[in-house]
Image 1 (spheres, helix red, strand yellow):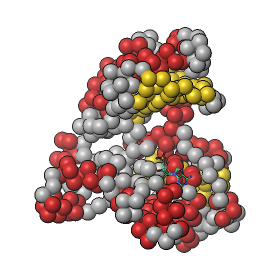
Image 2: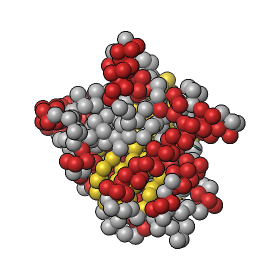
Image 3: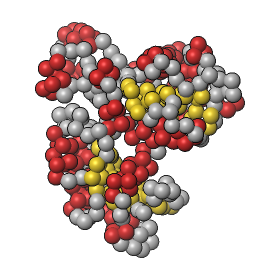
Image 4: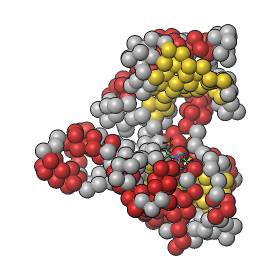
Amino acid sequence: MNVLVINAGSSSLKYQLMDPQTGDVSAKGLCERIGIDGRLTHKVGDNKVVKEIPMPTHGEAIASVMEALVDAEIGVIKSVSEIDAVGHRVVHGGNKFADSCVIDESVIKGIEDCIPLGPLHNPANLLGITACQKLMPTTPQVAVFDTAFHMTMAPKAYRYAIPTEYYEKDAIRRYGFHGTSHKYVARRTAELIGQTEFKMVNCHLGNGSSMAAIMNGKCQDTTMGLTPLAGVPMGTRSGDIDAGVVQFICNNYNMSVNDCLNMLNKKSGVLALSGNLSSDFRDLEDGAKNGNADCALAREKFCYEVAKYVGAYAAAMNGIDVITFTAGVGENDGGVRAAVCEYLGYLGVKIDPEKNNCRGKEVKISTDDSKVQVWIVPTNEELMIAQDTAELVK
Ligand code: AMP
């Protein structure tokens, strides 16, 4: 089966054509500068082709993807009809979507209704969907929501302690993000440890970071909230912050709330703590090794906050059996993993430094006598989207 996975942003669009059973990717690529000029990067195995193609809208971008996929030289299929289904990443499903679903008129309306909750992403996701519907009117399209995995949270986890009207009228609550990644890692971990009933904390640590408390495959709690700003500090996002700070900064710097939130989303996190040196953990590691105290603090603060949430989730679930690390930092940065686990000795967490000395591989890094298994499980959001899509259209 061929599933085309689409992740449409406002001016870019990523795609992968893959087999959901084997996970084999026959082609993948990226459309950039949509609405500006347009550039397609198409990869088949180790071969990469870059083409400048006018892309005034997402329609031309998707059309260029189709052309590349069926091209005599760089293509991998003979005709677009060989694409069995399209899976679309949709960022915000609000409290309307607790699972992936086949796209019809009512789903489009539901995604539109969630635009106030995901104003940057949902409109772009919709552009990708409508462009595919026009070019492949008979191919089933599936929406896979970043928020859906977290819809199993109980009210005590998702409600904010603010007046009820904001929840009832405006659906203001904790939603959480990276749900497709958390779902993939939870399922894969169950396969790796050969169990279905266990308590885990998944640490998705990348440029954006979120953690999820997962019991028997179901999300109990997660660090991000109404928006992806909440939780642990990230590359450029502050993570959790006292709302009073917003008031103070707006009043004292004559800043609008929007400008303040822009600062908290784009100019904060480890970037700010490092003295604006970098949001990339590799640069922070180099800086810390060369004696830069700000870089060292940025990494220390990050690991401390991640460890605090593991502790909080151990309390929330009355124990944990497995901790998993995933995404750019979680999969690659052994120093971060070691520093986080160092805080968790009281839970009986012990990692083997030699096993931890690896990158991007599925591997158990805890010792045999550790009370909690610790694993690196590289995430694969595209495969999860393809599998959900295949499941719904089969
Ligand atoms: P993601 O958002 O999951 O793509 O993660 C991107 C981030 O992962 C980058 O900004 C880096 O901070 C981090 N990263 C990627 N590769 C490495 C590596 N080899 N060592 C440490 N951090 C890495």
